Picture 1 (cartoon, helix red, strand yellow):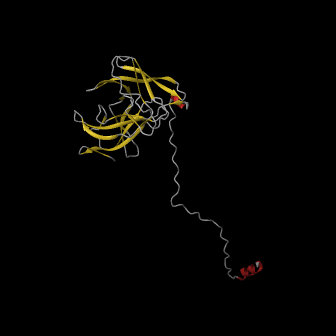
Picture 2 (tube, rainbow, N blue to C red):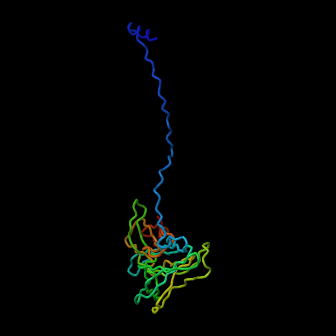
Length: 270
């Protein structure tokens, strides 16, 4: 064969090209709906303080989304966004706060936490305080400072920004409503809060399986929204400064979106 090709070339005869054997490259189909890269896991805050010990029966404060939203006009004519708050203890133990007189209108606070065997330990809360707070038309009550607060944030954009803080931050921790299905005590352990200006010590809290709540029309239960326009997030944040020991710190905030300004006095969602 080689001799024939050589003779042909010497004679000037054209020799047809011999096709090279093709290499095999399999075609891999591209999926029409590729699996997305999973997002980075959101870190869950660990239990606070002594509540990392599973032998303790700690409270777990859970705040529900703001409800019964309404826009009212204050005496100065400014618009206010009012809402109902709902704070539930779904932990294995009660929230028990004990105050001792510090000054005429304040008390220092400690938290009592029970163990699985029935014993308890008192833990000082250095930054927590009870205030003797006046409510127009009702008198004064001992209330927990920074028990819960209302925050207004921008919503709907790539980056939410803080806008305004509500006026009310003092709350009476109490057993107002029993929550079905949580297995709490049948009767209130923490009724309405103390109103005595002479009290040397005060006890308040929320039993496991019970709810504390205030209506939208209650004193200072609002965030000012004068001049605001767009989509916003109204947030209720329980224990915003982390004073109280809990078994779960990741469920202390809930929010409801609202479009401002209101239309014909009605609150709209967005």
